[in-house]
Length: 41
Image 1 (spheres, rainbow, N blue to C red):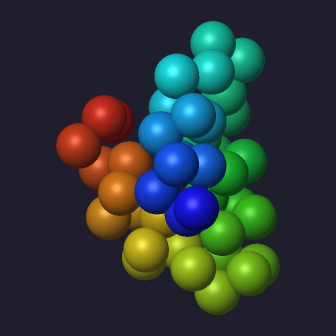
Image 2: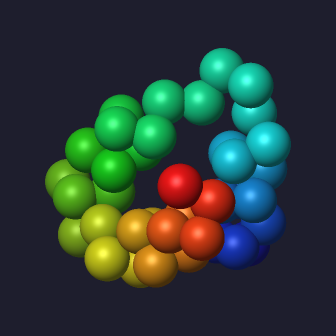
Image 3: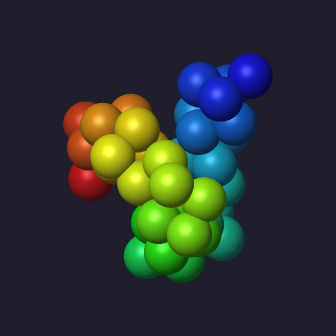
């Protein structure tokens, strides 16, 4: 589910990567999110 959510987020034309990373940091999954989206940045 996590991978699918990240892939769908990357496809979203209204995405805000900095906001995504901010929320991920609050949730304690910043490294996991960054590892997944790093290839698209």
